[in-house]
Image 1 (cartoon, chains in turn yellow, blue):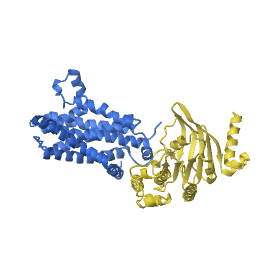
Image 2: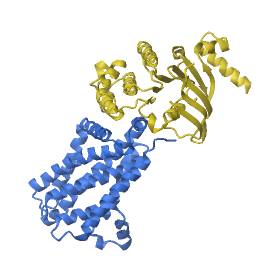
Image 3: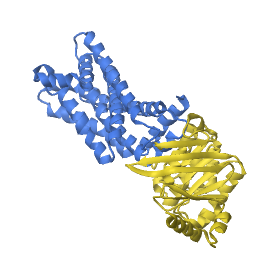
Length: 240
Length: 245
């Protein structure tokens, strides 16, 4: 078992008077690709925002690489990709990456490397506004890859991408993890769960289950993970 | 704070502006046309144009930069780029100064073009150097930028941001002494006028365009204008939060 890159204890977040995260505790092992799964509205984005330190929290502790989430020391070690593509629409892909590379203090040659990784080489000179939805998402993902961070927190990075590209990106995620980095990737598509080393199932602001895909199958006796997740929900509801 | 990040931000903002030639055209073309219009309007009363032409030149950048900044910063908040930047090694001051540098540079271009037309083609004359007018115009642009940055925190949509223009800019324009001399205003309007930063910017412009010695009031004007700019920037910085609800 690897040491934990992200440790969360009793995290509570209240947004608009509603308790969105209700005492979340979990650990994300270093050097893994961990999938954060759950239906929309389960609190995935809020949890991710809390981990990168942009979410105001009501209680609990989050430590990333041994430091409190969002602390200054983490700002060039943790990369974050928001759910909506957060790049400047009126700049080209390369101009966007150049700017963020300067902010991060990343080497200039990392710009082309990141463009290559997300397969946007043919579009580097195009403004983001002229790209398709999937291409914009990839441009936004490229920003997270610029300075070879130790922890990558990606909110639905593969949404709206075609199957080939999704497969390639997941392969990239594993390559990055093999280099020692930790990835936490959220998704609401269950068929992506099998591509993860470990899973965190979130439901209504609580952790429903954690473990490897195989362990979750064994635990529920279900063939596919979709069914396993449904079984876990049924059990949780029967228990309450 | 880092010079690298500040300069990168200024460069990025200028590149964004360059991508939008229509906005550049409007920002430079509209004040130019308005100055020509003003000149024609007072064709029979050239002394009116001579007395208000100079101050007006200095006030345009205030209005332009207020609008441009409030919209740009609002976009940055809505699009998620601000949230992303807040997770990166970027100080709030880097962002604010980056914007400030870029827009001050643009304001210098805007004020120079409009001044060149007014002083060159329309025969506007001021008692002191036109350079002083351009310098004060840049100062006003920075004040407009700082105020725009601050109010952008209170707008959720671009519609709302645009409405802040009449709300924040018009009253200051009306009460600064440009339309009615401050001495002729009702007492309570004078008090309101005293509290508005543009009153001092206008007064400074009026003083550099007329003959009498600048005097201590001019120093006060500059101090208040600069002070208001820094105050608005500080308030704007306070609205940039790393953690949001």
